[in-house]
Image (spheres, helix red, strand yellow):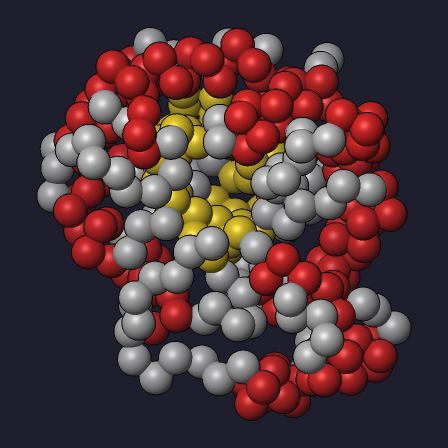
Length: 280
């Protein structure tokens, strides 16, 4: 298995910086074999961080992950998420048990609250701690939490054990740079970036096109390389084909110059002050 650059979690454990997302997987039985093959190739290439959620295709994405990692579970750092409507204490535990069954595993490495919901955050945290004690999850974290949400979590007993905040981050969505990213860094909370190419909407940008031509790369690879410049940020692009997986992996080898970063800053200006967290 290929060794990739890693990000260190608060526990000291390291995980690959570049992983694999599964949003929109499992929505068509016709391409299931291709999706499984893509995830398996990703494992071969060292992208052993796999992110999924009970929400994705109503759990079918978790079943696809289970098929892809069969016989290789110990290689994988597995992430899944509980929906906010299930995030009461009892609901979180039941949701985790359902995910474990679909994933055909005895533990989830990192279990996240998908976004804020109506159940009190203290209930979800209590469930996470109980799941840790039972050995059903190894770490817990959150997704789509802004600074005020993180401060509320850290004010709760045990909340400082949050390992990760998974958020939207790409060239077009740079708001976390002015507030959330430094807040998390100060407290050793790792960031996991989803939708690094804005679901393809970035790919016609002239600046990306020009830089991609210089590197004999695709626009998507340049957008991904730009996020990967943060050596402490995990990135989880989705790829439904083996060719796309190889392209994502190759983005790690692209080194943008200072001038190219300046070009991208002109095309996609960084935030001048904190703005509310965006999510898809």
